[in-house]
Length: 124
Image (tube, rainbow, N blue to C red; front, side, top):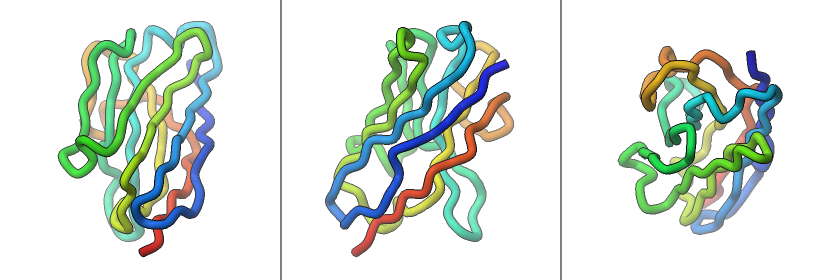
């Protein structure tokens, strides 16, 4: 089992940047595929980015491609989401998630463990 704690959210102006971090407990962090999701008010939780065990394979939602970068540091049991050129429509609660099974997951149901979320607000 793994416990996840997100940090790094906040209020930023449009065009600005934030870096989210997700610290994981446990000794098996490197065996999990990791993902970032977000949920805006009144909307379903949506896939943002995913990364494989080694960090060598990543994928992104079309809405964030070219602006967001997911990475991981297995020595620090941490996954990151670098968010650049932020837009008001990026405003949401951002969640970190871990997946035990092989392969990147794109649905919330594909993931086994979740953090508590961190709020990102982008003002226009």
